[in-house]
Length: 100
Image (tube, rainbow, N blue to C red; front, side, top):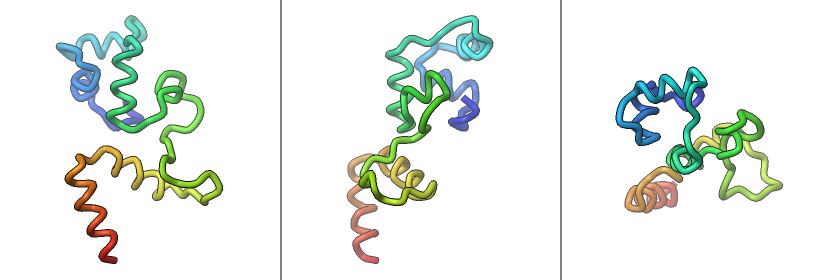
């Protein structure tokens, strides 16, 4: 969970565990989270589920950019943060960007 900048208690909440002891067991390799919890975590943090499970491949999706576009880390970070916003905040962000 270090890669997602989540504390053990935040990771426990994100995976809907009742307490952080389960998360400590996950981190120690004693327990594996089920796929539905991992899918939920991947969606919440806009990360690639394959990366979350294996640590391989691209960490973030680069949704919204054409495949041929040059994708800097800042572009991907902005897109991933925007994907996490509520609809109202997305509309407000769009208004702000269009005013530029």
